[in-house]
Amino acid sequence: MSEQRPPIEAIDVEEAEVLTLHQVCSILELRSEVVCEWVAEGVVQPSGERLGEWRFAPGQIERARRARRLQRDLALNTESLPLVLDLLREIEQLRTRLRLFEKRFLE
Amino acid sequence: MEFKDYYKIMGVEPGASAEDIKRAYRKLARKYHPDVSDDPNAEDRFKEVGEAYEVLKDPAKREEYDQLRKGGWRGGQDFRPPPGWGSGRGGGGGGGFESWSFGDGGGFGAEDAGGFSDFFETLFGGGGRRRRAHKGADVRARVEIDLETAYAGGTRRISLERPERAPDGSVRRKARSMDVKIPPGMTEGRQIRLAGKGDPGPGNAPAGDLYLEIHITPHRLFELDGKDVHLTLPIAPWEAALGAKVAVPTLAGKVEMNIAAGATSGQRLRLKGRGLPGKPPGDQYALLKIVAPTPANEEQRKFYEQQRDTFDFDPRADMEAKT
Figure (tube, chains in turn purple, green):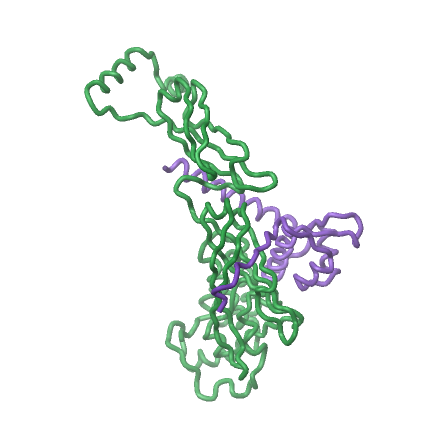
C-alpha cells in the first residue's frame, strides 16, 4: 500500500482555485444552460461580466452542489433555491453561535 | 438480513396511493435531508426513506415487494430471498457498482448518502443509478482534526473503504489509506480536495476527486466561531478592580494582555489576528469571568468581612429598583 509515500497535498477548496463555466459543468455534471439559469436567478454568483469571463470561486461550487442535491431530493424550483441556500447558511451560522453561547453560559 | 417494512418507514398504509407516497416522501425528505437537518441521525433516516421511496414509487418494484409481503414477510424478520428470485432480471439496472458511489451520479439521494441496504440490493440489484462514464466518481468523506492541526496544518492518515470491481465483475469492498497534508487555517465544515484520489474512472477515463469535509474536535479551552477563537478567561476580583497584566493562552502560545482597572465579568477583550490564520486571520476573544476565592482561613474570612463593611455595595440594587 501507500505506506512510504509522501503525504498528498490537499487543496483548500474555498481559497485555492477559481473555475470556468466549462469546468463547473464538468465537475458537477450539469448542462451549461442549467448553470446559466442558476447564475441569472442568483443561485451561484461568478465573478466576471460576460459569460466567457465567468469565474466561480470554490465556495460557489459547494453552493451549486448543495443546490443540485436540494433540487433533486426535494424538487425545489430554481427560483426558490437562492432563498433556501441563504437561509440554510444563516441557520448554520446561528447554530454555531448558539452552541458557543450555550456552552459559555452553562459552564 | 432484515426484511424492511418500507410502508412503515414512509409512515403510509400498505394500500396508499402513489400520491400519498409521494407526499409522505417529500415531507420526510424535507425533515431529514442532510443539508437541512441538524439531527445526527438525519443522514441514516434520509437514506432509509430514500430507499423506501425508490421501491414504492416504482410500480414494478412495489409489485414485487408487495408479493413478498403477501407471502408473509414482515418488517424485522430475518429475510432470505425465495428460490429463483430475480432469475429473470438478467443482471439488470446499474449493475450494483454505482449504487455505492458517493459521487456525482444522478438519481436519488444526497451524493454522500452512500448506497442502499443489502436487502434492497438483494431484491432489486444496483439501485439503477448510473453515472456518465467520463470520469470516476468523486468521493466525499469526513475527517476529524484537532484545533491545533486546524491552526497550524498537519498530516493526517485517512482510511476509506470503497467498492472495487474485480476482473470477474464482482464487487468487493477494499480499504485504502493515505496520508493527507492539511493546510493551515481550516475552519469547521470546510472542504478540501484531493485531485484524482476519488474512484478510478472507467477504462482510461480520469479518476474522480476526493473531497474531505473538515470537522474540528472540541477543545478543552477554545471555542471556534468561523476563524475566531473564543476563550473564557478567569480573573481574580482584585485583577478586575485594580487592573492587571495576565498571560492568556492562544493557539500560538501565551501572550500578555492588559486588563484595565474596573474590568467586569462578561467583558470581552479582543486579541486581533490571534484566531485561525487566513486572509484576513481570525481574532481571539477573551471573555472575562471574575472568580472569587473561597476563604480558607480566619484571616481571609476577616478580609471578606472588612470588604463587606467597607463597600456600600448591593449588586442587586438594580433589580430592586425595578420591581
